[in-house]
Amino acid sequence: IREAISKSSNVFFCNTGLELTYKSNGIRTLIEYSDQFGIGHKTDIGLFGEQSGTMASPELMQDIHGRPWFLGDICNTIIGQGLVTVTPVQMLQVAAAVGNGGKIYRPNLVTEIRNQDGQLIEKYEPELLREINVDDRNFSIIKDGMYQAVSGTGGSAWLLNGAPGNPYAKTGSAESTQYLNGRLLEGAHSWSIGGFEYGGKEYNFVSHITLGGRGYQSVPVIRDFIECVYGDFQDAKCK
Image (cartoon, rainbow, N blue to C red; front, side, top):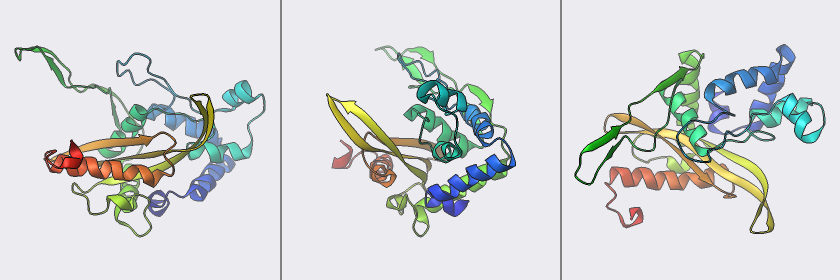
């Protein structure tokens, strides 16, 4: 599984979904755990217009397309395609949960608010919403695979290799068809999520480029950001 994560193998995860289906009700298992990660639910970050995204299900398939759930739908779902839609903030929560061993916190845009005189108006403390019911060993395996995506042979996030902060990452390509400015555009949204170390703490990231191509194409954005953090944003590319 570490290699499958590092190389972003759709075939491996499709087969995993099929195996789940043969042994139990595969889609219900996926829904159960996706629900714990917050897929299909608002994060309550406090931004007006936040979207909940969607988690695929037989019921949603019937509502949208008027057809039953087919075996192949589990393959689309388990790799985040088909009826699955997410927001960058949701995926940042997922990355953080992998990094911290399964804790889901309410996201905040800022840690505190001060007035023009520097007086504290409001401070936002971390708020633990829930803990995901997954063994710590499984999170370690996932994280190992994400480290290998950066440093291993054939890793999908190899463009982060050598970046400071010992980063780990998972890339993704979300196939999409949408109208923009009256034009029908087809392609893939480029995604990458992960984390890195800085100042004795671990930080998480998400990079999303609308119709940006394959997942690895969003990785240079993260590399530039990490290098800017370590360079105190002094380099010209950080301005």
